[in-house]
Structure formats: structure tokens, C-alpha cells
Length: 130
Image (cartoon, rainbow, N blue to C red; front, side, top):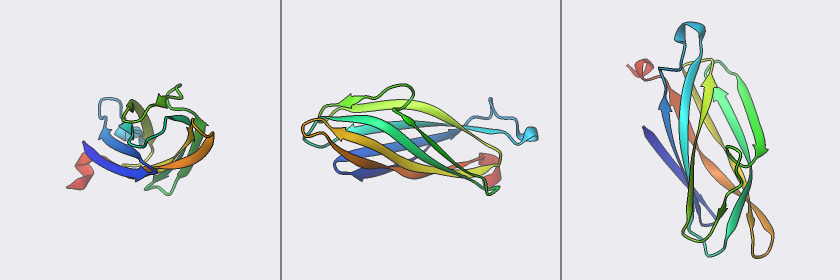
């Protein structure tokens, strides 16, 4: 598994991605990747994740955006020094792609909204690396 991280205003986002050959169908140009995200609140205020905005780029020059409330049906609240972890998936029509994005967070103490960077991570079929 490959791991990348970014920090924004005291919030660390760590992404780990893995190719899932058992769900992929290479002969049909369908490649499935799972990614595990850990969000750590290293700040001094309680925050809530409100929404996500993903940018997905494929080697075949396909570009997609995904926007929505929360993550996997949740809008977690994180006290200082707490973390939230979830797993999701992305399908590609090519053997290589990248994802990055932002989370919109709410600082509970003063109702301030701010964006947190989701680091760019690469999705690549391992046998293509040779």
C-alpha cells in the first residue's frame, strides 16, 4: 500500500490506496482501487466534516468530479486529538489515475468553514510498473 499525507489548519489527511484485482476486469478496462482515509484533528478546536469534493484523473484523459455530503454517509465530528477513518473505492477505465480533493470542515466554536486538502494519490495497476 502507498501512503500520502497533507496537513491544513491542523488537520492531517492520510490516504492509502490499493489495487483490487479480485474486483477488477482488465479485459473490460475496469480497474478497481480502494482507498483508506484517516483524518486527524491536531488542532485545538472541535471540527465537523461537512462535505467532500474529489477530482479524479485517468490515463485515458477522462476527468471526473465527485461532490457530496460527508464521507460514506457520515459527517463525523472530531474533538482535538481525535481521528476518523473510512474506506471507499474508485473504478477506473485505465490502468493508471490520480485522485485529490478537499473536505469542507466546520469549526464548531465559531461556525467558521474551511477547506482541508486531500493529498494527491496515485492509482496504478502493479503489473504496469514493470
